[in-house]
Image (tube, rainbow, N blue to C red; front, side, top):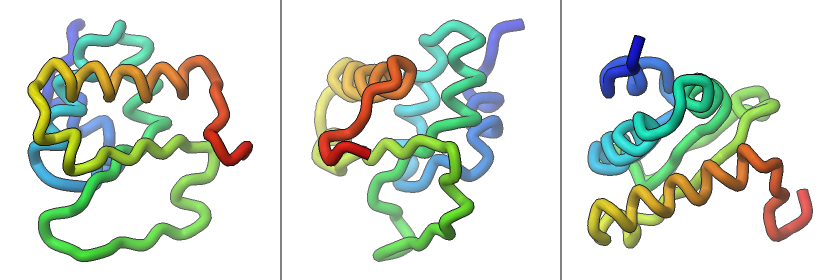
Length: 105
C-alpha cells in the first residue's frame, strides 16, 4: 500500500522539529522514496530547523542513540521546491550510504 503524507508525518513521531514548511517539505520529499526507505528514514532520521515557537531546544543523550540528525537551514527553505527536495534527498543519501560527517564522528 502506498504511503500518504499524513502517514509519513505520523511515522516520524516527533522527529521533525521546526517550521511547518520544513516539516511538509521533508514529508513530501520522503514520499518520493521506495517504501523500505520511507520506513528507514522515518524511524532513524531526525530533521531539525528553527522552530516557530521556541528559540532553542534540548535533547537527552538517549533521544538520538543510533539515530541520524539532519539540520535544515532556514535559508534552504527560501529556495524553490526542487532545490529543497534535492538537498533533503542528498542529505538522506549520506545516511543511507553510511557517510561520516566532516568532523570524523
